[in-house]
Amino acid sequence: MSESPVVGRPRDVRRDAAIHEAALVLLTEVGYDQLSIEAIAARAGVAKTTIYRRYRDKAALVAAEVEQRQGSAPPEPGAGGLRENLLTVVRWLAREIAEQEIGMLGALFAGMRSDPRLADEMRRILRRDQAAMADRLPGKELAPGAAALFAEVAPGVIVHRIVFAGERCDDQFVQHLVDDILLPLLRKH
Image (cartoon, rainbow, N blue to C red):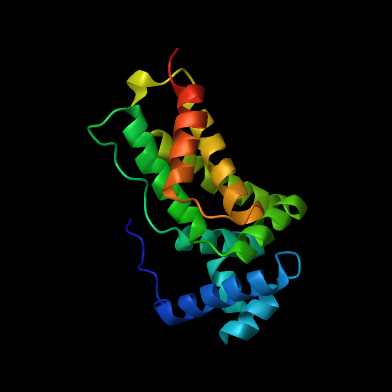
């Protein structure tokens, strides 16, 4: 028995874009706790039901926004050794984090503390991204568990530098992070 095709109008990508834009602006302006589906719908010029057809709740919508904003996948490992590959991945990671809205990052951090659903969604994204970064490091030079440790330490240091210290992750800092922190931590002894 074959299934009947789904009947109805195709999704309007302009509405999707308006919803995402409204969610980002409001998330940055009012924070996660004050963010509401009603406000997003009003800002986007759509009905609340339009949003609820796409996302089960506010946490799912915000997680989709985070996933949509991600620019690219980590670079593939090169022919160089561990240091060269770490430099490449850390430069990419620093660019990705620096391109995020500081207000959005703060709203996400605060929202994760108050909403377990958002925390679960963000951790799902984080685990996926950590696995992608770990896959980019050559395993033969790494200590056991080093790839997972890299995925925790490198983003933490970069977020601290950009968000809390308010400084750029220039090449000098990237080299310091790789040479003085990551290599001693990750390399087989």
